[in-house]
Amino acid sequence: MIEGASFPRPASLIASKGPPLIVQVRVFALLRERLGTPILSMELPDSATVGDLRRAIGALRPDFEGLSRSLLIAVGSVYAEDDRSIDPSTEIAAFPPVSGGSRH
Amino acid sequence: MISITAEPIDHAAIVERVRDRSAGAVCSFLGTVRDLTGDDRTVFLEYEAHSALAEIKLAELEAQARRRWPIVEVAIVHRVGRLDPGEISVVVAVACPHRRDAFEACRWLIDTLKAVVPVWKKEHYADGREEWIHPGLETPS
Image (tube, rainbow over all chains, first blue to last red):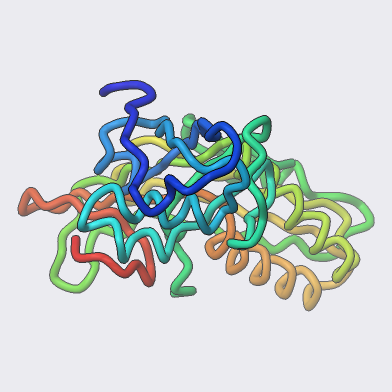
């Protein structure tokens, strides 16, 4: 398993004013397994939001587009909405829906 | 008491722990590993958690439950790692003065836990297939 595997940022996210954010994202379950790493290093525009991170993850691989729409993204201990800005000093985690969400 | 643990869960000890002289009712729920889902035979399950965040979310659920019901004591323990069929994956135990509140709080805690606490399971089936259980996921497996 490669720690902190790095991926190029998608071309659509390159328009940015300041230096890019390097964000370390802890990933879990199916997402962790498909990436082959527990920590994903992403380069995002300086004013990136949770939605930008979601789209960047979705652009990593063709099979991630649908997966990225279902991801929960935690900023610190809060599940964040897409309009929340990314603070790289706060722990960020991304994961697919939890096991028993179907309420069986 | 809130815990994410890799050790086998002693459910009787957890129930004992929440019992109290002021509680006339103790309701407990055990989640156990089922060996058959439809036609798929489970050999074992693998549970993974974001343990720190899971314990924070469990503590938030406990606080919400204590606001809704007159809870005397509550314990929520979830196991992670490899579990064989029949083993206990999660325990919720609630002590209240009266049984109606104990039943309601216990039911709400396990249902809400399963929807919001970051714990996932991966099925390992007898035919060699493996499957992460992610309800509602928009992706082919």
